[in-house]
Image (tube, rainbow, N blue to C red; front, side, top):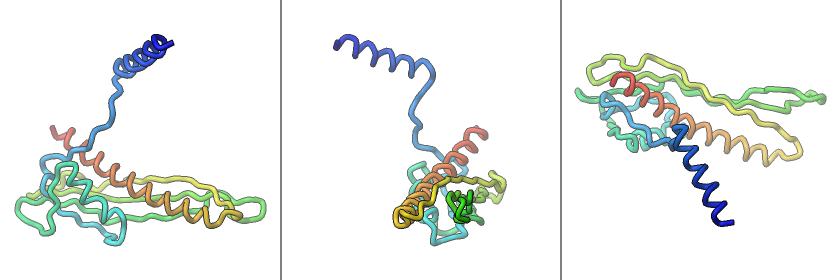
Length: 167
């Protein structure tokens, strides 16, 4: 029995290795953004709170002031909201979609646009059950937090792709 289990585990590992699967590593920002200043439209958002730390883990030094050797990452638009997706027979909303839309652009230290303004949009759908109103509020709050975390990662991946394209 043990030999069968070992064989199955070994086969699984070999299959994963053979197909090119590997765990996603921490994103790394391009050299042009190693010293960066953030301009975020909504200073009250979790994005404003979480993005600087994520950039530092990705190899950037986040600066408070502009300087001759400091790039700028601008996020002029950051909106998060929910919309009705479907209405039930009682004319009440049954499903919602939560959308998070961010526009970003990056300018290097010389003032050259290295990432033209781009849009990243994430969305999640959820069902409203009026008998579980408190649970839905907690679910909506958790979805907001998940979207904020996912948006930070999406921004880092976009910046990492910029570095791969330049290199």
